[in-house]
Length: 138
Image 1: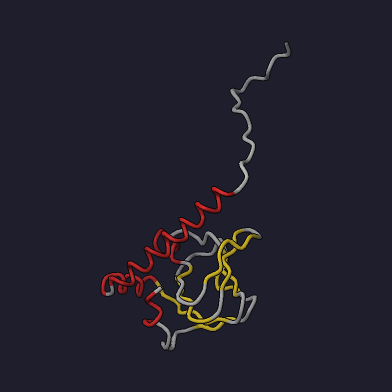
Image 2: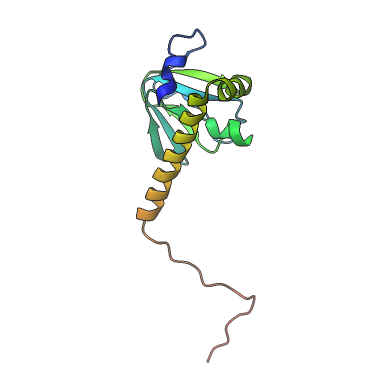
């Protein structure tokens, strides 16, 4: 994404070692992050659903919908991220339209990837709907 230049050299950049969690599923989302260096796996359950690279946003959904984290973010390699709290997020959206567009593009891309992944999975067998009655033997 094009917004990395806004954050690369700011003092708030936080380092993480490989294997460290930036955040965990279920935690309150008080910040999103811009990946400055390294790679971060987004994990749901035990499945890595995406790997974020430099220039990627992670954790943005929690700022947008004010819900707990829907995934965990674990450093795949040593990395550096820039935290963007809600106040900074609101300011950036208002004062830097390209930032808002970058966040929207990131969300759209993630949704398209998820849709593609779901579409290529084998269909699950559905249970037949129950009407609360046991079948009578014939």
